[in-house]
Length: 211
Image (cartoon, rainbow, N blue to C red; front, top):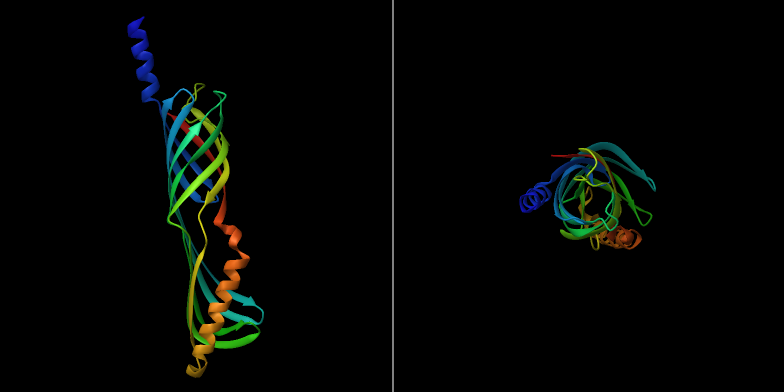
């Protein structure tokens, strides 16, 4: 009986699983290990670079723009399975390296109904690097029934207040100081309007395999 318990315990401790996933944080993978019968630890990472060229037209603005978004996060989550099945409650820290950046080429930008001709410009959006995740999900990468499992997560990442940085070079040097003030005012306006982004929605779907 003692040897059976040892084998049984070793099997539980050594159970591991890998999940491939895609969602609102990009594409990535999770590595799961069992801690207790009802609790797993999940180490995750996502990385998805995106780039898009387009013409920005709004309020008579007309700018040729390149926008880039690098979705890059690392997480260490505790998955609690209160009923012993696939349903789980998850929480833990996340390292948020998501980066959003825009480069503007020569054109006209309208700020507070005033047009400015610019030769170039840049804009970036950042959030807190250390964030926290809370959510619900379904799926156990090291579940008892079979090696393949479905994974689903729905939660939030609290990433703090957004920090917007923007600058532009006016074609007319005499208009530079007015342009700088207009940009500062617009940044505050955008930060107020999109303050809700401090709570980022996280949705992901994936497939898990137990080793």
